[in-house]
Image (cartoon, rainbow, N blue to C red; front, side, top):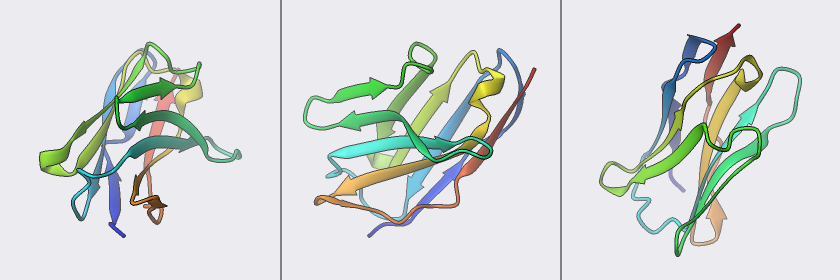
Length: 117
């Protein structure tokens, strides 16, 4: 298991951008799946973006496609989520997770993103 720490959230106006980071306490170079999730107020956590190796195959939910970009930096053991043209409906707590050796990790605390209209 590696510990995951999300950061980079904040308050932003609609149309603005944020870059979220998910830093792992250990090596994630062998991770074959990395993903970002979000939990809007009063709702369940759901998948936003995923990166699956080999390939990679990258997928986004329809609501964020064209605005969000997932990426990884193995040297920094970090997964990123670049979020552009943010909308109020993107307001949520954002979490990441990685799968290493077929095992997902314990959830981190997440990072709050609030988009003001």
